[in-house]
Length: 290
Image 1 (tube, rainbow, N blue to C red):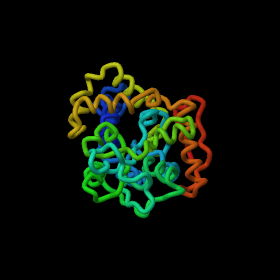
Image 2: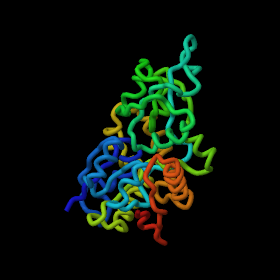
Image 3: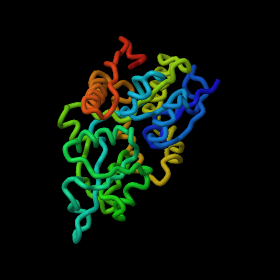
């Protein structure tokens, strides 16, 4: 039987999962794919809607009763964190931000259980904004540029294109996190639904899909570009180069420590439910359970 898989249409996901989706991984079952923003998949995973699903690490406390966290295929890294953007200062384009903090501001965010928003809440805890609105990711930068919001929280390829909207980065939350913890940024995770997917097998399929993606990047090119929508090829290449990295095949000690740090700090601050200490198998074929 086919497995249901939900990933984003972003280049890092389509690059990583190309071989699995197209039946090129020996021994893997057929896969039926749904493409959706991570805010959508976070919510769908709570309903058990998919067998394999890409979610935010920030959403794990609500999901680990029903899902295994797989130790591959996700998005962790350095220099790839979310950005808080504001409009440029008057008179010189985008060289100065309109504001230096967000006290009293209205901020557009891409989802209330995204890792980006959780990092934002930790960063802004002492001076929180007045109002938060969840806005589809692709609408955030144009809305901030138009003055509809005082600031916007963006992810993924926006770090390569925000200048085009006349926007300025108030803070790079990845730089803030790495400077404070010394750890990579844990962004997106791959989960396998308990009782539906063998997590050891699933980790093997995904690692083989990653291996094939790296071995022959041209094989997935048409597929990646078809789902990248309006992204130019050079932005697509930079996106993949940044988000598909050594942590994609195995988060390693640093990756697992980063997730523990994120969830531990957020739980201590009362921002998410407490999650029991993650347990890893010796082979890391499966990762965490609650």
